[in-house]
Amino acid sequence: MTGLLDDKVAIITGGTSGIGLASVESFVAEGAKVAIADIQDELGASIAERLGDAVIYVHTDVTDETALETLVSTTVEKFGKLDVMYNNAGAQGDPSAIVDATSAGFDKTIALLTRSVLLGHKFAARQFQAQGTGGSIITTSSAAALQGGWSAAGYTIAKHAITGVVRQAVAELAPLGIRSNAIAPGIIMTPIMARSFGVPLEQSDEFVAFLAEKLDSTQPIGRVGQPEDIAKVAVFLASDLAGYVTGVTIPVDGGATAVTQGSFGADVVSAAAEFTNK
Ligand SMILES: NC(=O)c1ccc[n+]([C@@H]2O[C@H](COP(=O)([O-])OP(=O)(O)OC[C@H]3O[C@@H](n4cnc5c(N)ncnc54)[C@H](O)[C@@H]3O)[C@@H](O)[C@H]2O)c1
Figure 1 (cartoon, protein in one colour):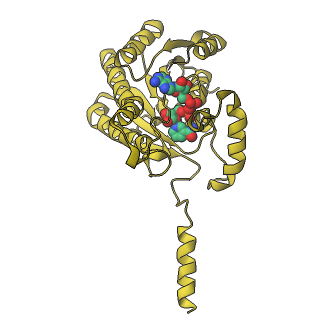
Figure 2: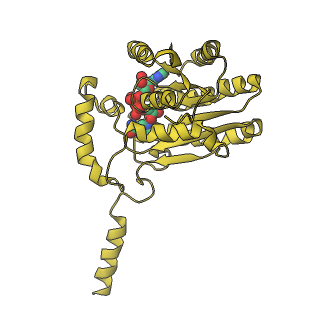
Figure 3: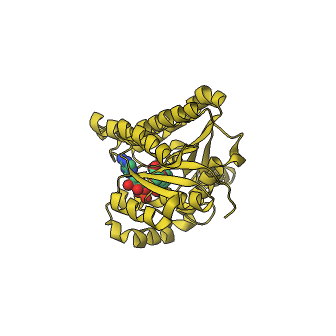
């Protein structure tokens, strides 16, 4: 522990699992008080009990605007203020391809992955303004915000739209000292994998271990990501070390979006060799 987040109060949505849970643990280890917002109530209560006075659990469905407003007021009632809002909750959403897309499926995905982020910004920024302080807003975006093909259409579009929220937040909120940044994880071994592929949650650990073995060598850095890889960057963005950082989406993907994952480069070289040897 280095006390990077001493005296800070944070909300972390989706904080009972995966990236959110790793972030809760890292924030607390760095000295923050944390409100976990999620819909997994039993898990939330047991995590709050395990982590003690620094943590509360607040049942919050992030697709419900009133619930998000209450989340901020409950956190401030408990801990006296808010410094960091981490919009992290998410799921795959509607798995349809473009040709099968429906209005209902798309709207649901946007409500979960994008509207929740906009409203998280809204209620956090209002609280920061009322306090007369700045603040840090962090959002878990995705490699699917940077390239097509990582996930289904709705998820890809919803995550791309987060970039718009973050950039607009700079225009409107940076003058108030409010920073907004996103993290774009690549392949991270969390229960979202089991949830997305219909594997029972009890088998999540076994499933991600199996996936990791298959996928490690496909990643430029030689391994898939772990929730802690994202939590460390979230701690940085929440901390005063990032005081001059706003409006960015930081890929945390072992280099996956920096290079083509196809064999395009090698294909060009071999086609050129074939031509010159003709
Ligand atoms: N794991 C990856 O490979 C990966 C990659 C890119 C982006 N992400 C993003 O990271 C974020 C966290 O996902 P994760 O991988 O830790 O998955 P996870 O399934 O382990 O955690 C997601 C959490 O969000 C909560 N949640 C879902 N719907 C909610 C709702 N309506 N209201 C409140 N909470 C809700 C779940 O209960 C769960 O605790 C998501 O936004 C996801 O899109 C994950």
